[in-house]
Length: 103
Ligand SMILES: [Zn+2]
Image (cartoon, rainbow, N blue to C red; front, top):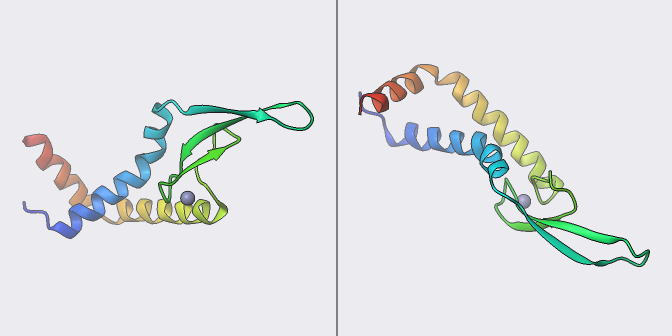
């Protein structure tokens, strides 16, 4: 079976969105030690690449995924859409996977 370009681009887009988090977890985040604050506490931050806009930002938490609330909302929307796309395309996805397995 032939798969059209639209199907393939939607498929890879959805896979990318849904696996981004897992791939990010495998990477070691760079710790950036910033100077102490006025109270003398050492402030630690992490270099993180935003899961939505792909911009690098520094976060106080090692668990941060997005640079802003705007990106957080958009990422969550994107993930929902990707999951819905998978749900609605089970058959072509299965055919696609079977085709790939035969290669
Ligand atoms: Zn962002």
